[in-house]
Length: 60
Image (cartoon, rainbow, N blue to C red; front, top):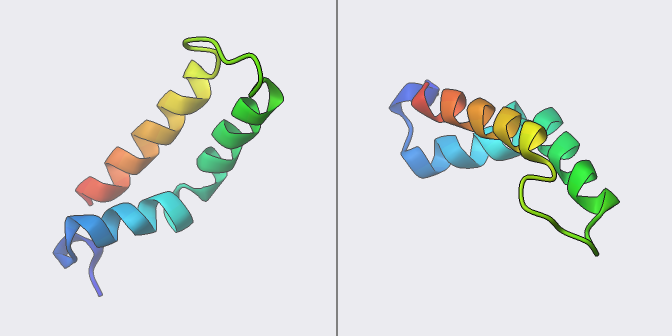
């Protein structure tokens, strides 16, 4: 199935679990390091990389 022809929700699910799994894991690991002392933008670099990956994958 062509990702561009699937529903946005399916593309989002694929992007977050398959296509962007590496950047998602990196972001998650960053959050886990300091989850008891969360601060704004503490993992901004990792979040932006994950966000860019997901947006690119969903747009197809």
